Image (cartoon, helix red, strand yellow):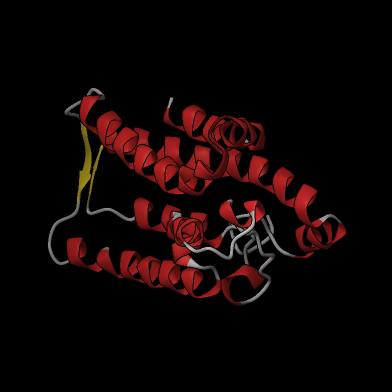
Length: 190
């Protein structure tokens, strides 16, 4: 449900509808999209059934060792944001442009840039890769958490498929060449 709503709200024609309906307020779309995503995620996490079945619980010191891959994945996420604009990703740049007098209507929406440097040389979606690693390594695994992990991993993979269709529309052959050279999520070809 979360993935479906998230994907529908990310569709270009939904944003075009929003822009036609609300005009220049499209500048607030990305921030509202992200706030709504966090609220939905929290509600699903809280309202979903939490089966008490525990799959494993690592004893000390292994429960602390599991923090190493999580820390590495957090560093990887920060590395990703070195190559994309965090404020653009969140939606703050769009709002900043809205309040300036020197914008065009095109500037009020997201600015897309094709990045093929840093982590993007190894994975077309390194944020998804590092998120999967972060979520995978856990000192305590319950049936609920395992179900959520599998769901998010599936969503990352399915969502990346639709994101890539948009990137091909935006960047054409440059993105197609990039797809041929760099794996989608995992930084190795299977």
